[in-house]
Each structure stands twice: as structure tokens, then as C-alpha cells.
Length: 457
Ligand SMILES: *Cc1c(COP(=O)(O)O)cnc(C)c1O
Image 1 (cartoon, rainbow, N blue to C red):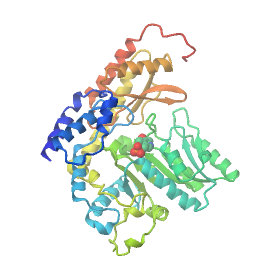
Image 2 (cartoon, protein in one colour; image 1 turned 135 degrees about the vertical axis):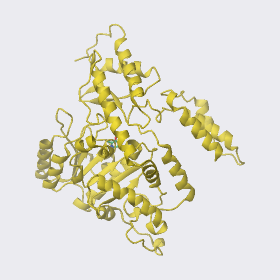
Image 3 (tube, rainbow, N blue to C red; image 1 turned 90 degrees about the vertical axis):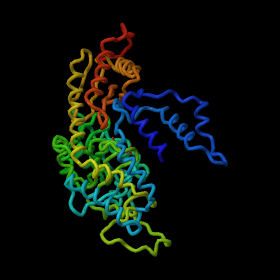
Image 4 (cartoon, rainbow, N blue to C red; image 1 turned 30 degrees about the vertical axis):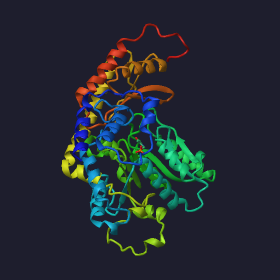
């Protein structure tokens, strides 16, 4: 235990200066790391060493200059919670087996439901991530609206919807051509009128619309779909409204975020990723549902070996609400940091992210030759080299060559964009400034005369 503690302190202490990317994993080392376990015992210190070496051959996702994909950081208090939960090893699939712990987890879920304005009898589940929650949503919505014969079931997304929805639909047996892509307005939001038309046309053609997926913070650009109008459409057309808040949902804890997410209270379900917006370690998602009965109806099965089970009054059996049976006390990962630090610390951190992204946007706009097409709704800023896609890729390569920051890229409307997402509790102004300085310098030191290929604006 002491050696593990020392290891963690040293690892986390080095994060501030860690390179953006560790060394390339050699075939030799990969082979050594993958060796089968020996018949006899090993030495803990040696094994810790091996683990540390393996962990350093990686993208530095926990450091303060990680602005690629969707950061989260990884709060140490949550990792400690995880160790505690694993050490007591309670089973929280069925509430009678550990009612006290399930009561704690329920407290967090009830608090979240109230933050989003969901009714008192709403509920949910702590999942391993938004993908898992989304699968349960598609199955629950399918079950409620279409029952067993769902061949004609049709759902609605945009080009910026996370692919986990299409993946869940495929697993749930929805035909790929019935995942309908609604056009977006010039500011990249779902076009509500176009969605209404598509739903009407699908009904006329004999398809059965059942699920409308809005995104509260797209992965591409952090854009929030028009939730109020989509809620009205879902009501009118009797569709299940799902809001994907995996990236942006926790901005609801801030006043500005609440304004952006207006309408989220009308959702039938919301997916959240505490491993993004609450800075918790990977593997922690949340699914909130207006009607837990709909989740239960879609997931409930019974086994003859579970007959002796009593029932814990008032507490849900999580196994009846999702895909998993055996599960750890996942809720402590949320409960401990929230109770230990208090909610205000999270509000302030998320507010800081909004400020940092606004600052990055303003500064990027000042750099000659850099185009910043959209003002961020939340904490994701995208930009490009005015000279075109190839130039943008080269610009990004020059930034990343420093091995000091991580940014990523995406494609929106057939154009390549560099992307900076600020969402780690370890990222502050100085780290964003580091990234901006690298962009400035990469934009100034463009290599002379890029080849004159048929590219550009
Ligand atoms: C990350 C993300 C997902 C997928 O979540 P996982 O936790 O990786 O399963 C879904 N939607 C959005 C908007 C995301 O940012």
C-alpha cells in the first residue's frame, strides 16, 4: 500500500511537465509487457515499475495541457474512492445486498436529476460511460414506443451526433438506414423544421419515428442543439427525447451553462460523463431517465437462483435498469469527490473552463491567417488555417511537434479543423496560454510556399 501511494504521488507530481506523448512502444517492450503470469510470485516493487513504464508509453491524458478529444483529468479523490469501494467489495446490482451503499449512490442520482429539473420520481444509473447509457436509452425507447416489432423504427440525429448513437441503434436492431440524419443550420445546430419534415415524411412512408436525439455539446464543436424547440417537437410527435450531455451536460452546474442547456428538463433521458465534465477517472458515466419504469421494462429479467432475495424498500435494483448484473459500488467515485470537495468547487472549475475557451477563441481570432468559424457555446474551440485543409493539418503537426500540448482535429462541413477542448481540472490560464503561444508560433512560421495543389478556399 505504501509503495503504491508513493508511486501515485510521484506520478501525479510529474504531470505538470510530462510530455504530451510518451515514447513509442517498441515491439520488444510490448512483448515483455504482455508475458503470461509466472507460476511463482513476483515482487511488488518490480511489478509497480513495469506498470509505471507501461503507463508512461501513452498520450498524457491526465496532464494540464491535454486539450485533445475530450479531457477529464482524473480526480485523485475519486481514485481513492475506487480503492475503498473495491476493498470492501460489495455487490450493488441488487439493493438488498448492500442497501446502505445503494442509498448513497441513489443520493447522487437524485441530486443530479434535480439539477436537470427532472421530476422527483425520475431516476437513473451510474454506467461505465455514455455509450453504455445510450444503448439502454435506445432499447428503452424502442421498447416503449415500438414494442417487439421494431422493423420500421426510426430515430433522428445530426451529422454531429456522437457515433455511440448509431452504434447503440445497430446493437439494438434498428436498421442503419433508419438512423436519419437531420440537416443542421449554419451554426451547426439541428434544424428543427427539417426534423419535423423528416418525421412527417417518414410517417407517410410507413416508418415509425420513436426517438429524437439532441446533443448538449457536440464532440466536434461543443455546440448545443436547440433543446426547447426539439422538446416541443418530441412532444407533438410523441417521440422519446434523449439529450446526449456526455461532453457538455455538467455545464448545467454553472449559470452560463444552464442558459445554454435551457430545455434539458424536458428530456426523457440524459447521458452524462463524469469522466469528462466532473474530471473523474475513466469508466464513469451516468444515465438519467424521466421514467425509470421504462428502463426497467426494457431490461428486467429474472433468474431462478435469485429467489431468496429480499427487497430493499424504496431502493432500485440497478441490475433491472441496465445491461450489467454484477457490479461494483461505482457510485462512490462520484459520492466521495462531491461530498469531500463540495459542489461549488466543480461549479467554479466548469466556469473557469468556459472562461478559458472564450479567451482561447478571442486570442485565436487575433492570429493572422487563422480562421475561427464559430464562437464556442461551451469549452470547445475549433480553428483552421485560412489556406485550407492541408495547411491546417500542417499547422497542427507543427503545434504537436513541440510535444508539449495535445490538440486534435475534426471535419465539419467537409473542412478540416483543429480542435481545442478545455475540460480538465488541471488546466488553467497558463496552460491555455502555452497552447495559444504554440499556435501563434506555428502560424507565423509557415513553411515557405506550400505546393500549389488544387486545394484551398
Ligand atoms: C464522449 C462522448 C460520448 C461517448 O461517451 P463514452 O463515455 O466514451 O462512452 C458520447 N457523446 C458525446 C457528445 C461525447 O462527447
